[in-house]
Length: 342
Image 1 (cartoon, helix red, strand yellow):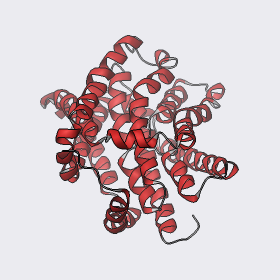
Image 2 (image 1 turned 90 degrees about the horizontal axis):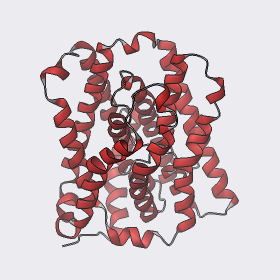
Image 3 (image 1 turned 90 degrees about the vertical axis):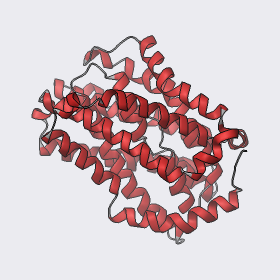
Image 4 (image 1 turned 180 degrees about the vertical axis):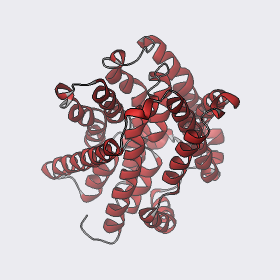
């Protein structure tokens, strides 16, 4: 049985039940606090990553994250979404081209190894696909084009399996001993593309299960991501990787990711105005084209930087960006939901 909610029903459910949740996130986001707690636990008990089989749990959990992700994908919605090709093209260009190019502009300014490591971390952030759940929820709350948001957020994760490593391989060798590109793609296929494909093939038979237990699956996703973050930071703390990262560096990272988000948001808004997009399509372009997926970031980092002791630093910008995008887009979405200018 293929359970697909009509668009008007989907909007009604999301507008009615999610708006309160999003408005609460403006004040505080539980996942952001959980990330902070995981990092604190990694600092206090870094030896736990040797005691517990976190690597095995993480790999198994990642497989099921993307299997359930495939179960949630509706082939019918993906086919229908192809009609609005101009909007989709711009969302993906913003996600996989505009972001990386803006970061590449700062490459000639690098002088020290620490600056290079942080810059690679920002390029990694810039090369990641868009997030799925929050993009769709925020677009729905802001009364944007929900089907287009579902299509773009879904296809972005699949494109990222190919595009993100292509951006990174030219710069990874300078800082890590990463496997060759064929090995990277083999890992991505086994850990991500294979379970997604299995989920899509079984969607018509089991898709209703994924929809029914979407809240529980969201908790599962976040739990696995927290385990990966804990292990990554525990390894980095053991290797004294953060010894050279000061409070000033953290503030600079926070300011940089905020500036990057706002710049891309302004660029996408300007392009939408030039092309005379409807308000619904403009909202979708700006909300989907400025998001980055923490789920993909944590998974890809373990594959692309598996031999690097600096993986904690690599994850810093995407975790800060995750908090920033939730805060800013929640405020913008709530204003648009009440008919106000963002």
